[in-house]
Image (cartoon, rainbow, N blue to C red):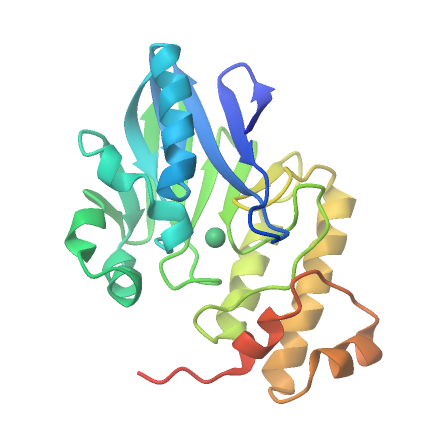
Length: 251
Ligand SMILES: [Zn+2]
């Protein structure tokens, strides 16, 4: 685990990929004196390391905001029962697919459309953004940091990974990327998996590649990744997910 300091009270706890995978994982910590708000909680093993470090610094986790409720984001929740948990109104929809005891992971405060939170000097804006996952939230901090969950995924060096439409809904993913584009400017984009992204032109280039892919699979659902690459010359890591994006969900 490595701690990246974006500014003195805005930290990224960055974990390396495991088990031969290529994706790392981040837990974000926003500090106000001796309290903090964290964004996402990783798997339990990640969270325990963050919790230990914060305990050693005498900092208590009072708020947790979830970008969405997939298992690699909620693993720490059972360890922070005393904190206030913020999440999308659609949390239950996603949790029911992944965990049996889903009641233990539900947010205390749900976001229906938008919600503002003040935490010391920090101002959060939470907005529903159903893209990668129906229960996605787009989280803006101090008009500067934009936490995008898994709507943008890259490796820890910043190489882009293929968009993963967990709802098999590329159109929703297109809309979520457009919502992120509307936030660009003097902003830093923070994916839960991958390196913080800076520089409007660079970010825009990445997002256009994603839109190219999403439009392509939305139109040519049965085309292979190779077909897509031949057509567009756009390349991603994690192309195994292409097949998952194609499978129609059976309810
Ligand atoms: Zn994830």
